[in-house]
Image: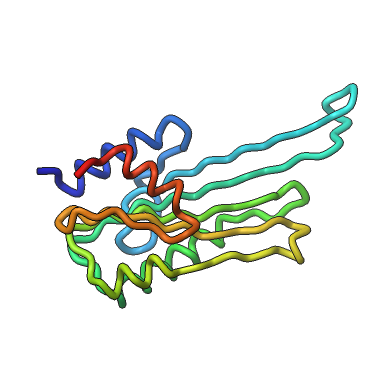
Length: 167
């Protein structure tokens, strides 16, 4: 039987191909690891100094571990991760989007907590969309209950969980 730590190691290995993984930095409660992905796309004319446009995309993935998660703990986790993720967003003229993702690994998940996590929505435009946007994705795995879940924005993270864990 898989343990939470073994699942975390497997996910970190899957994410480490594209993400920078940080273990020993201050993170919200229950979060063990942070993964960061930064992408910049530019279009220029004749010289790299003559940039026509540039776009930056950022993705911050928080890996959280919990034995048993109830609704109050789920709300606290989401709020803490959202606050920490917003601090990491750097709004500048080339910013397009920043995505904050929670990958939750737990043994058991209360029904109320699952309902809250699946229905949670966060989408924010910065300066009417001129400075880009941000959203929050949530996906999780409850080992004891053998379920994989996500909110509507977290479908891609759910797909990654499904490809790494089969029940």
